[in-house]
Length: 379
Ligand code: G3I
Image (cartoon, rainbow, N blue to C red):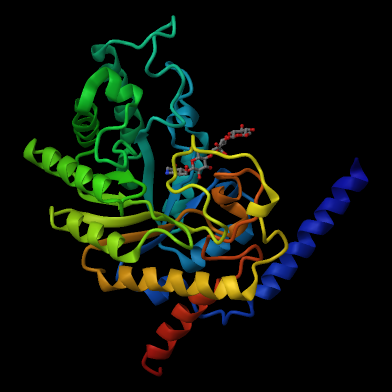
């Protein structure tokens, strides 16, 4: 046992040295956050390994290149409120403390979502749907407890996640089945009561799709007509090599901004693999097929060039609308951390993020940093 431990320690030390020395290949004074400047926050979703003590590789990369963080999973109901009378804030506290102690803007993700829902939340002891009154009480208690805990530490919350489907109608989630459309205004009301200073967001995927765009516009209007606070809409930005159409994406950005809210790109990634399913509905999974996992060793230069060009086009779109975009967040730090390696097909090797498996910036990120550095006045 001891030998294996020593061997694995030697491996990790070698990897750290290798990555650290490789990190030198990008001139040390360049950073993505400097390239972005004050256009908008540049953020990253982090998992609990990365925010626990010890992952200095990840933490150093985050501190060097990003100005914002968001928890990938640890604040979701099934993790933070697993039983009716039990909360587990341990991982969420670790992430928030990492953010605060490093001057990073922290976003809370997410308060009300049909997925990763605590199994007890919408049902009674016999597994039957609870009454509207009971669900309202449970939502209020959950949102008050979680939001109040991080008052003054978390700038804004994904209050409701993925409640509108492609045709603009409401997803038939347990929240909708029990409370109807009312569950969304209630969630925003409770979040504002819990922390009047917090920004409040509605977050969804596939926001380039016209039906969903129109449904979200209607939702923004409803919340505003009710005098409820909504600061921004989160366009998740889970992309592929063939979707979304950048013009449709821009149309949605403009449609939301026209309603008087800001726009955030909240979960940006771009799969470099063959598209098998559009959207990010975690329930849409498929069995493994080798043909759909073509780049197990590395990404061919031809594919990498197309991917980097497409990513840079979207980043330039965000910069074009920096007056309405307040945050761009990558949904993971390095390609190895991405949920896309296991969705919609488990066990693939994808290349969807801004940093590669060696913690190196992708070519388009290097270009952004070098272009920004070249524009700096000579000191
Ligand atoms: O925590 C358990 C662990 O105990 C268990 O051993 C392991 C075995 O499978 O599963 C672990 O839970 C996994 C969880 O991530 C935490 O790692 C779940 O299986 C896995 O399904 C879950 O996936 C997350 C997914 O949301 C679930 O819906 C992804 O990491 C996360 O990136 C993804 O993020 C969502 C956003 O929150 C909302 N927008 C869509 C996006 C993609 O679905």
